[in-house]
Length: 227
Image (cartoon, rainbow, N blue to C red; front, top):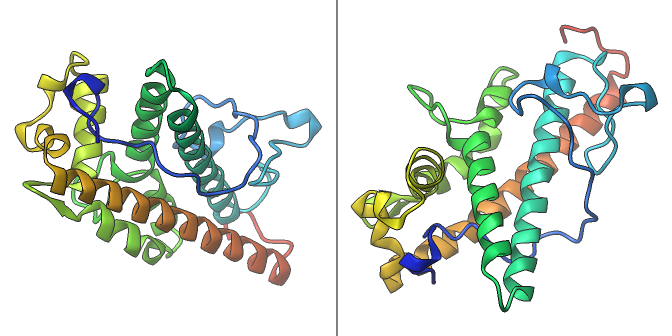
C-alpha cells in the first residue's frame, strides 16, 4: 500500500493483464480527436494491435478504431506499470512515472469533463454518439464505487488534477478524503480491488468494441462516410 512519501496514493500500477507486444506510440496533437491521428499515412496508417486507421473510413468506424487504440494504450501502460513494480527494486522512478502516465490516461478516457453527462472522458463521448454508451455500464459502476468518503474515480481524478497537473506534486495538495485512502488498510485494499475490476472491465470493453468492428466490417464492407 502506498504511503505519503510515495507521492501519489492512487496506485495505478496493476498486475499483468495481457500478453501483448509493445506497439509504436502514435503521434497526435490531441488524443480526443480522431482527425488528429496522423501515423505514417504514406505507408498505410498506424499499425499495431488496433490495426490500421484509415481516415477515409466511415466516421463510426474511425471513432471505434480510435477508442480501440486508446484502450490498447491504457492496457499497455498497465502492463508496463506492473513490470516496473516487479523489477524496480532500487528506484521508485519507473513506478511513479507509470502512475503519473496512467492516471492522466484514465482521466482522459473516462473522467474528464463529466458535467451533466453520466460519465466523463473521450470514450463515453465517442461511443454515445453512435448509440453504444451501454458498453460502458460496468466501467461507470466501478468509477462511481464508494471508497470511504470518496469514490474510485474521484481518487484518480483528484490525483491527476490536484497533485499532478494543478497542484504542487505533494501529498498534502490532495483532499482529505483522498489522503486517508492509503493510510487505511480497508480503503487501500478496496482501491486495489476496484483497480483490478476496472482493468478487467476495460479489457472486456476492448473485446466488445473490436467485435463490433469485425462484425460491421463483414456485413458492410463499403460504408458511406456518414454511416
